[in-house]
Each structure stands twice: as structure tokens, then as C-alpha cells.
Amino acid sequence: MDFPTPLLRGKLIKRYKRFLADVTLDSGEVVTAHCANSGSMLSCKDPDSEVWLSPSDNPKRKLKYTWELIRIGEGLVGINTGRPNKLVAGAIIDGTLTELQGYETLKPEQKYGKNSRIDILLTDPNKPPCYVEVKNVTLMRDGANLAEFPDAVTTRGTKHLQELTDMVAEGHRAVMVYLVQREDCTSFRVAADIDPAYDAALKAATKAGVEALCYTCKLTPSGITVAHPLPIEI
Picture 1 (tube, rainbow, N blue to C red):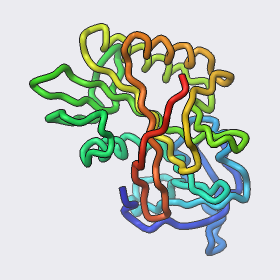
Picture 2 (picture 1 turned 45 degrees about the vertical axis):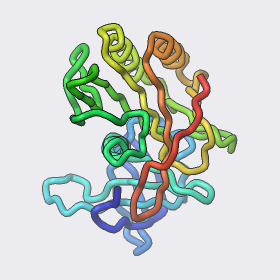
Picture 3 (picture 1 turned 90 degrees about the horizontal axis):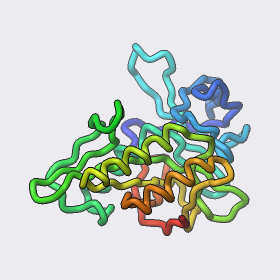
Picture 4 (picture 1 turned 135 degrees about the vertical axis):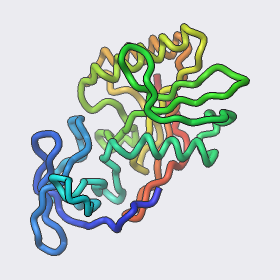
């Protein structure tokens, strides 16, 4: 996925009110950008970090800029949770996600479960439908090269796992995809100390037949691509 317009570089002043971030651009201008990430962003919001913003020319938008990337160490991390669904869909279409091949149609944001929407629905006349939920992963602590999710308690995420389990019980296929938007991780696990309920829900879901996949990304200021799978520690 290439960014449709060139990103602008700057320094993070602060992230606040969950969805706002003040940034000093390289030009010296101070702007407020939309932060499309409802998590705690633990390890991904240090002041003075190098960040990258995407501009918008939509006159109806309240904020002209969206925070896309932050530099941590030598690498970039993608914090925009609006990107992973499209990245995973693209990786299914181009064959990168080998585990999700062989379906005739791919539909995003389809209603299912109890008043929910599945991120991706894969269908084929010759096999049961496949329900794919996608989560953005940015957390890595203590330089251990271990990606973790979630970075805050997520009752919504636990609900999604329960609904995927329901789909398996109905005879469908259900897959949980963790997309690590950083290049410095070699494996993945649930941050059980942050959200023990989510940890228990994932263990129960996989025991019931929900599949869990994790893929890492390659990131540059020009674009983001899904790279290769990471092992999951459950």
C-alpha cells in the first residue's frame, strides 16, 4: 500500500485526548493531527519522536493531517488503525497471506454476530465462509523483539473473539489476524498482564477452532506492505 500523497515529517509534541496529537513539522509549523488509534499507544508516543503525517485536501475535515508513522529506534511503526484492514485484504488478494487463499470473493465490513461487523468475509461456493478479524499491533516492551497485543484493556476485542468462536460453532471458518506494523519483532504474544480477560478469550477461542495468524510489515515513508508471518506464543 502506497500512501496516496507524500507524508510530512515532524516531531511529536504530545498525544492527548486519545485522538489528537500536536506535531512540529520540519517547516516549523505546529499542527494538530488526528490520531486514528484508540489504544494507550504504550511505547509509541514519546515526545520529540520523529513522526510522519498524511495531509488531506478534504475541506470537510476538521483536521487536515493524520498521524501515520513514528520512528522507534532505527525503524518505523504504523499507528493508524485505519490501515490494517486494507493491508490484510491486499495481502490476501496478492497471495502474501498464504493461509487465506482459495476464496472467490472478499468483502469488507460485513454484518455478523450480535450487532457486529467482521473486518473481512471470504466466500466460495465450494467451502464454508471464512470470517477474518484484524487487529493492529504496535506494542513492544523492553527491547525483547516480542510484539504484544493489546496495549490497553479491550472488552471489544474480547467480544470479537467470542463472536468468532460462535462462527466456528456454526460450522464456518474464523481467523484472527494480528498485523504487526513494525519490523523489529520476531514473535508475538498476548499482553496477558495488561488484559488477562483477552488472554483467556484467545486461548478459549483457539481451543474451540478459531485460527490465529500474525504477520509483520515493511514500513517506509512511502508506503506499508505486509511482509511475512511471525510465530505466535499462546
